[in-house]
Length: 451
Ligand code: DOR
Image 1: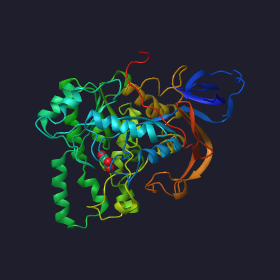
Image 2: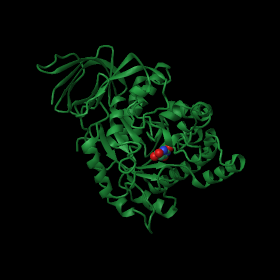
Image 3: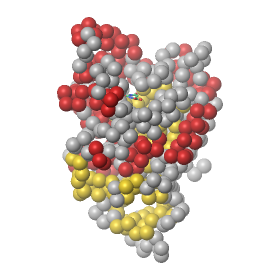
Image 4: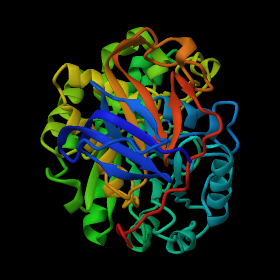
């Protein structure tokens, strides 16, 4: 493996920005910071004026393999990920078949080993088929090899709902890994949908999604998840908060000390209800994009340290599927290639600092899931890196979108701040606006550092 020498970079790491060099050898960071000479034979990458960050770790993506490969594959979406500076991802179990057993987890890992450009991890999906669902598979999870258990406490794409209280409680008590939940209350949603049908018949407008998948539905389910975690002592991570009311339920403070944490997704920080008029079902997702007041509440909670991880819930569907009428259009939007660019926009607007972007997109997911030797710039740790030129401008357009579905809700958006290089486990996976098709990511591991 060729040695890589990143010269005079603005290294963004652990709350600081310092100019220095970084040397990569044998997949790992061999030397970090200060001015030292490039060793003979190393490839020198000039980073003057650029930021060098730990690679982004996206803790919630849907890459659709196996079974939904008309929408996306592990290969297509992981290539989009590295083009956007994402070097690792945790992928969701609502594939076809769902990832609800140890065998299916290993099958997915084998697919990723063959095709993924980024480092990967897969979650077991909780299921409630039969008297105790897949509780035995939950109990048997190896916490060094599997990052988390995913529970859909509200239904979304796929059929992995768990809404039986006894089973939820048993899973919260038994899980040897952190539990990530999708929290929306199905009963409230069903009643809202009935009301919308009475008002509009089958021609429900997309913006009604904000009322159907309502703030009340999110709050009720998130409250339930938190109460369950408090009662059982489970390690709970609530995914994609979309309301001000839910966000206020979480404690401020560093992620390392918390047993109950929260994720916010880039689209809930970016879009608001008024955007349905322009984008319609393209921004239909679960939980829904809601009023600007909820977006403001999420920003406030982020500033207070109540929201820990920023991720995407990258959920691609084809243009054809998204062009159907509201009731038939699937929920979800493709975002993994653009999350870092969106956050850099917020840095320019002074809503975030570059250090806090690194905290929420890189450090926090690594700490929360105890991802071994990744997510930080540290000597001896894996070299997962992204170099950003803050002055380089580009526009999101069909020709630079790498998602297999070929569209983005951000088409036409002009960004200043471009990824110039992405390094995955020491390999240059992206440079000169090209993904290196030969690069393969690694299976991530979990547990105490240095163990
Ligand atoms: O909008 C969504 N789409 N939310 C989810 O929870 C699932 C996802 C998907 O898989 O399409």
